Length: 203
Image (cartoon, rainbow, N blue to C red; front, side):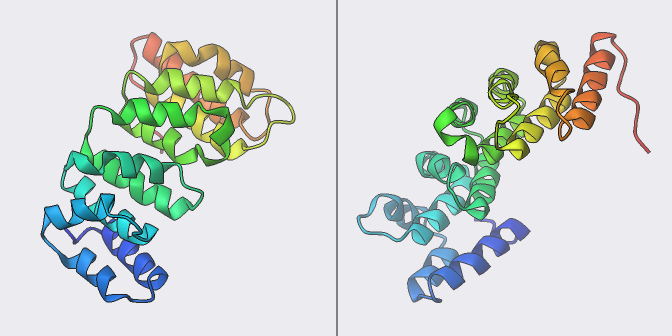
């Protein structure tokens, strides 16, 4: 298993601190035994840091036993856990990932934690990506709606995806001061795509 990535080192530093440098933490970080990692995911009374290590390492090794745990961590209240889960889910390449991320992003009860599912959907460029970002953004355009960072991630993601279905919601986003610049850029990307012209490089 590859343990040289910067993302792994960041996770290792964090969980060592969280676990008070427990020997079990070092064992999970260092083991090459996928079966012991998988057993940690389902063993009772495991601390969250242990399950996170196991899921991250299995996900990066494309072991689909990590999928459910990584999806739970993707929508965690701790942003650092969300980042690590998103990274591992990208490496896992499980076909269920986009559907799961879309369900998290569009759940109005979890919008506060939708930033990383939105970013993951953008990175995946899956069939579910644009519809989920459109639906999420539509729910965040009310004048008093919170979570503007999630809305901005949706706008930026729709600009990256350049899906023509996003045009109406992006035009609506133009009226929001925190979103207007990104919405304008996204609409420009749509215009270039629909005209059959490549988006010009920015300096």
